[in-house]
Length: 445
Image (cartoon, rainbow, N blue to C red; front, top):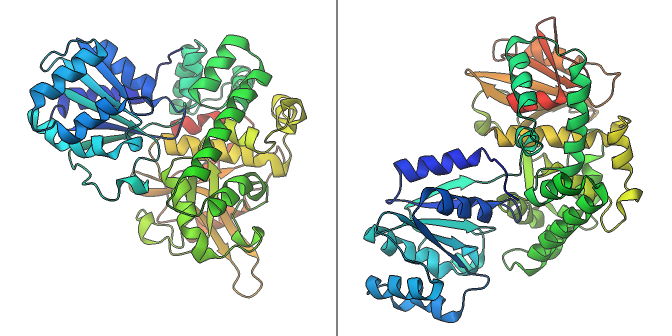
């Protein structure tokens, strides 16, 4: 089952503007849809294509990338005969799938691109961080596109509900309340929270509408991630797995910050690389604490504090109750019946982080602590840039909430900030120059 994906338009741009001088590298976590997108590109935009899967390719094909680059006529003839597919000059695509499993093919791209006969797409999970690549020259002629889980807009497309997205965007633009329809959209959004954006999970829900079957798919994906963690040879797999399995418990805390001391025996210097590994593998989204809220966020992230969100919220729901029947997973009832408690608000905050990441934002937050008492005196869930201003975002998972931190932030940094947002369980409203939006409108920020 294929779905409409926003990233596909970027792939078309690569074909029209950057091929054949650059290979397209689709980078993303496992099961996020990279191979499906590459195959669609080959099928719809080219006269023919060949997919070389390095998880299954025989040695005789792999050997071509090492010993046959000096005779490219022979190289391409062998590919055509083996894959029983005719290649046409400037009209064919060669897909190098799971290229991280065979770095020699990535190294060979420089020679293949100089030839310019065909276009090339690489797909990879963990491709940029495996030790297997340390001894090869990574080609500079790569056009990298990140493939992320499906966002709420893409999920609604999958549900054949395009009109709802049009309504959401229209009301966001005009800041006009949605009225009764807000309840219907929120129902779909709660389903999305549980299903998540992994295409395989979405496909199962489209087909069966059975959360049990969807949860089974997600648990299998989590098992794949664990296997990747255990078999990678770059950083200590025990440390990586410790962080991965602690994500739900750390996000369930009030401040959502990941405290390494909660992992028995953990030392910061030992866990720096495992955190980077998970982030580079695109399994998680790391949020950094900004010490000075300005548009140059990256210049002011000196605080070592961080939050660790799952890259896909549906996977977070399943990770919280890993290896248990979905009927034992309290999140399903809490989300479906709109009964989230404060410690379960991690699901809402995670989906906002996911939406901001999908919109191209790096994830930052602001937290100020009293130096003497160590108590938090101000905390803003997310900060984004817009029109050369900093826009603070507060996420409220319960109906009874205050915005004291947001008001303090406004008073202190008034000259630096733009629109102030509160994402909540209600409708659109504007009060005291603060814009209140329903959670699902995070896709518009």
